[in-house]
Length: 503
Image 1 (cartoon, rainbow, N blue to C red):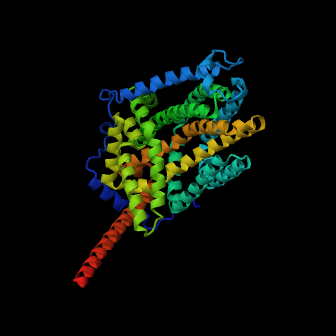
Image 2: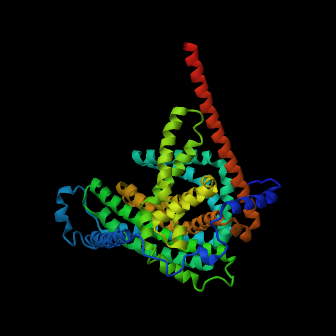
Image 3: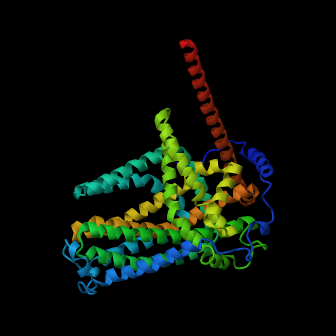
């Protein structure tokens, strides 16, 4: 894989022409930064209901996890909870401290991987992303083999299917990876020059680690309980959904903070510009953790699942060929997901950071901006989110493997239970580090759609490359639309000819 896509020698001239066309079509864009960024007085509280739901969930689950862990901490059935689960008891009860160290290993490995990613962001980020893309399929296949060897057939099949899907997805988007790596490289360059953003990310990783200490305490209590395997799995699923939502909220909080900073830097022409507002990071933190936090909690419930489904459908759709029946079914799913993406997409977080809107309003405005300017075709072509997700999954798999191997040595019947929940812990911790780059990517696309000259002023060469790619994608879509229209016209003519012949 090359570092950047190969572009024609006339890209510079083309970029200037494209800029003129785009600027003519975007009359809404203002060159004055004060007209782009929402003022302090105009920001209001949004999605307060979901903020309340998240806080109630956090308090309730925190209390439940404390009870589950304390019930078997140094003494079996300390809080006499077993009297309520006597009808479900099928296993010999253990102690919380028997299993808690395994989750401590998961927390330590996940934190180490996340901090290493941030530390190597400026020098080795591109190489690490390439490794994540190419090695993930192999790693999933190896874990599948190990599960079959351990006679865990369900999980062996699950990881084998995951390896196959990952392989097929990479094959389907292999031609997009050079452009994706170019965008990621520029995003890393942007973030690396904002040292305060990296420090904030370290702090939020510490917050997640503290929460996972309590979470793992409750999870260890569930694993140590005398409840049957089915009951323990249901409890762990509930705890895992809670951890996923909490982790997504923290990641998207970092997303909003970083997006706001990147947008300000691009709008004002540099971090050291005289027009930069004072203490931008402090104000961004203030708005993110107060008036915009409800929107973050709301979007975090749905965005990740919808985005992942959209990637898979897009990759599969591009490789179907001329199978009209299958294409029709996939197109139906594709348009359904596209409708959901209109109201749940990651670009909403940039609008939240900059304009202080509600989540659905931000998502809709971002998507309409992309469609009206044609940048949506560029966003659809880019696979940076998928590449970063691969890195997150790879980090989670490494974390789960470390805890799973220890569990295999001590309690072979609980290795999957501990390994899978440890993997989720690792994904959350590594995901906080990965979201820094993703935030920069989303901000770059929003700025390019708002005003291409912002990107031109920041990096002229990158502007020429992204403009040429946009032109190519728009040409590709036009050609495909003409092909579909021609095919439909030919079918109608053939049908009429057959009707006339029969008459």
